[in-house]
Amino acid sequence: MEDLDVASVDWALSTTRSVRRRIDWDRPVEPDVIETCIDVATQAPTGRDAEAWRFLVLTEPEPKLAVAECYRRATAMFRERAPEGSGPKPAVLEQAERLHQMPALILVCSEGRADASNTALQVAFYGSVLPAAWSLMVALRAREIGATWTTLLLLHEEEIARALGIPDGVTQTVLLPVGYMKDARLRPTARRPAAEVTYWNTWGARRAPE
Image 1: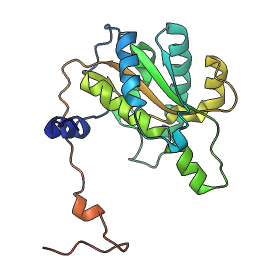
Image 2 (image 1 turned 90 degrees about the vertical axis):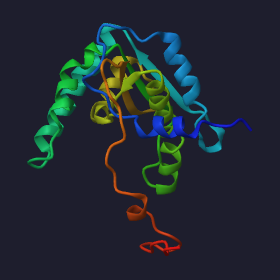
Image 3 (image 1 turned 180 degrees about the horizontal axis):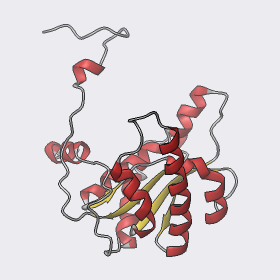
Image 4 (image 1 turned 120 degrees about the vertical axis):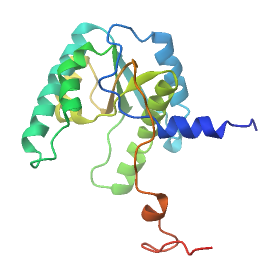
């Protein structure tokens, strides 16, 4: 077993944040780099070794614009329906306006559909594709490529499928708008500590002090 640089791994995992503004809008993300990151992503765990994930990379203006138009409508809908004070942040609204300018959009999909009547099968379905989406985001971050984890586009899944030629029976999950970072300073953010969100042996039970 090769020794891991634990500090570097922890740093990458702790600093993979959504990057919406500090993007080099004019620098393309090389296809070989994207495919290398996808090669890393597909090492993620998947149920029954199905490898049902599929990655649709958009770099041409027309498909990016089709996605961006749907995304802007989804953002507007979210903004209208959100309780006062909990709507999308300014950075989210700004990204929605500029989504078509992102160097690349990566739509992470999975062949098949989740069984809406069975929680266990739903968890198994999405649990076999979302780890790959997260691994892809971390792999991109390690190469100074920013990404944003967003699922708003699913409000218009059928329209997106028609626009991009996605077959029936393929489920869209996460959209990752990506671009090389420019002057971004990624660092860990404040989160509740493990001791506050972790129970031991019984729900609600805290670990006894040593």
